[in-house]
Length: 488
Image (cartoon, rainbow, N blue to C red; front, side, top):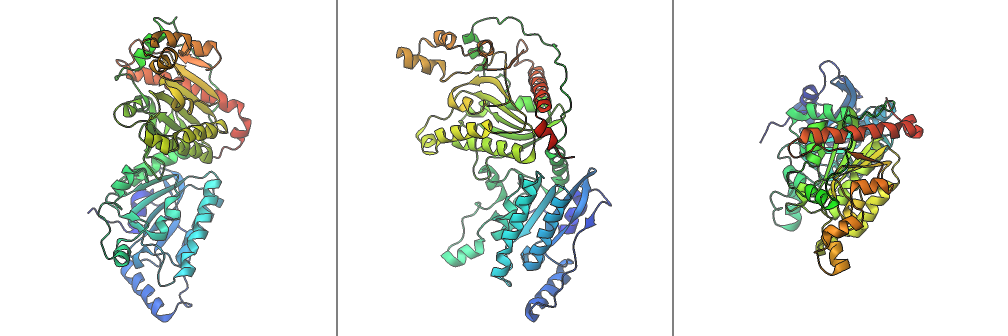
C-alpha cells in the first residue's frame, strides 16, 4: 500500500510554500475526564498534533483556499466535540472570507469516548458545509484511508467534487463492527475506493502526490468569471448549401468514427475534470465534466454516443448524472453546456423499472428552470426522449449534419407503415435535419462541419466550441441578474 501522508505533510505537499496560515485555536483539556484526558495527551505525543484535524488557509498556484485535513494517527482520526468545533469554525470562516474549501478526510467517525454529544456534532458541521455551498463556494473532498462512519456519511460526502486516494477504505460501516455484529467478515473489495469509482459514488482516484495538480485545476474551473462582452461573430466557415439528403446526414452521424463529446473535450477544451456518475450510481452513456472552453469555466453534460453503442446505453442513471451536472452549474454559478448525441435512450425492462420516463421529465424540468447561461448543441444523432431531455437552453444550436427525431427513422416507419423500409422518406417528411430545424425556429444556429469530421476531429471540435462560447457570451451579456451575482 502507498505511503499514508500525515496531515501537515499533506498540506506542505499541496499548497504554495510559505502560504499556510493556521486557523487552529488551542484546545483546553481541563474539562475532560482524567482517563480520557490521558488518552488525548498520549495521542498528541504520538501524532505530533493537538487534535485529529488541522485547519487554515493557503494558496495553490496563487489562488486562495481554505483547508481541513484529518489524520488517522490521532485517535483514529475520530471526531470529538472540540474537533467538530474546530471544523465548523473553519468552514464558517471560509464562507465569510469567500474561500473555496478543500477537505481531506481520514477518520473512523465519531469519537466513541464522547458518544452521542460528539455524534450529533456531525449535523452542525454538515449545516456549515451546506451554508458554504449555498454561498456558491466550491467544496472539494479528498478521502484518504480510511474514511468511515459518521464522517463518510456527512461532511465527507458533500463535495461538489469527491476524489479518493488509491486503495483507500471508504464506507459507512466499519468492517470490524460488521464482523462482530454478524459473526462473519465483510465482503472484500466493496469498500475500496476503486470500486466506489466504478459505481459512480466518487469521481476519481487521486494520489496525494497528484492532489495539488487536481486541486489547482478544480480551482481554475470552479471559480466563476465575467464572460466579457459578446464578440462579433465572424464567418470563418460559411455554411454552404447542404449537399445530399437528410437521410445521408443521418448515415454520416451514425459512422463509428464521427467525433463525439470526448473528441470535443480532447481537442478544444482545457482544464478538463471528468466526474463519475451521480454520487450514488454510475451512469454509462452520459459524460459529466468541468472544463474551460475558450477560457470560460463551464459545466458540460454530454451524451457519449460511442459508449452508448458499445454496451453502455443511456438509461435512468445517465439522466440522473445529467441532473447532477445541472445542479452543479446552478450551485456554482457556472455556464452550462449540454451536448446531444444519442441513438436513443435505453429501451429495456430495467430502464422502465428505473423510471426512465420520469428521469427524462425531471431532466427537462431542471434545464427549463436554469438561471445560468446555457447552450445546447446537437452534435450528431438526436433520437427520442433521451435527446429531447437535453435540449432546453438559452440557445439551441446544431452541427451541420445533426438531426432530431421522435424515434429513429426506422422506428417511425414501423409505426406509420408497419415496416422499416420507409425510413429515408419519413426523415424528409418529419423535417428532422438541422436546416429544417433552423427554418422551423427550433434551433438558433447551424455550425458548419469539415468535409470529413473523422479526418479532421480537431477542426470539428474547434468549430463546435467556438460556436458554443460565442453564444454563451451573448447570453451572459443579456442576463444581468446572473452577471450581478458573479464572485471575484
